Image 1 (cartoon, helix red, strand yellow):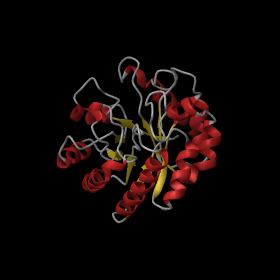
Image 2 (cartoon, rainbow, N blue to C red; image 1 turned 90 degrees about the vertical axis):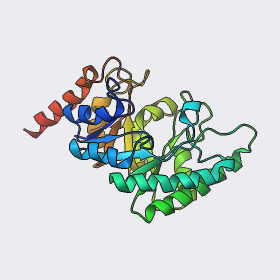
Image 3 (cartoon, helix red, strand yellow; image 1 turned 45 degrees about the horizontal axis):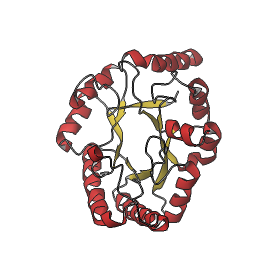
Length: 266
């Protein structure tokens, strides 16, 4: 059975953020992820993790002004200094929270800037971040996102992202594979995961359409979970979806997966 982490940015929105740690533990999760730790003190977050016996498996680098629609700054030529400062801040939080990998959102390509310049900026920034994080034993991940939800996002497909990883040339840079985003952009989920498993350090899920919980859309998750398990993937899969009703009412899929795993073990 794959290991699942509750995404506290998306799940348990019925309660304030700091109360979501307890809600996730009560729902049976032993691990969590979220977009950004930075609005809170690291000590406060560490206390919530420890009190609820949870492991933090992922957070993102600072990504600019999220409320204003920015989705990362790694591809922006005029924000390199800010990006590098953000890497330092991410390292401070990652060390305090004992998280061993952080994700980089590439950002939306700026108007009026040559595409090759934005790509070279992204490559250079990822090279800087991968080296800085490696010194503290923290993995860097980079994630393609679909162009329907985030028009203009700098990375949209697996191959495109793997090409950037190749050009960065760091052993400390990996692919974050979001099943929902890649279903929207390219399909071929099982084949892509199998072909690129050595470079995939983390996965995330949601169904399509709607970005709701597994079982609400077209993705055959019962097959996909068994397939991922058969490949020997030992990382977590982050549950980064929007519950169709409440988080608790939408967790039937997880209980079904656990039940199948228990039956198979008998």
